[in-house]
Image (cartoon, rainbow, N blue to C red):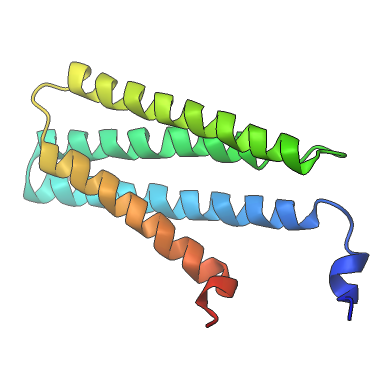
Length: 141
């Protein structure tokens, strides 16, 4: 049986919804990162806060680049081209992450590794949890 709801939707509706949800997750993560940097400032000091804020940038900027490039909808795009775009975007994302960490380690002296990596890891975990919450398909067993 064909799902008529899905069949009647114009092309690209699903990708626009995924793009909107993805950027909502990034907005949540930016807020979470600012809160974590504020907590680090109050509890651990300015260097910890700067390290946490650096982790927010190192995490969000490459992921925003990846999402904007990989989730771009172009009419008539083949599955092969979409997959190639995801691979290229992922490679650039990794390169930007390496560049971001290098920049933080060069520009920020001394770096608080607990705040830097702790914030980065918490943002990563929050992204996974938000994606699971937004996409209820993964929660069905």
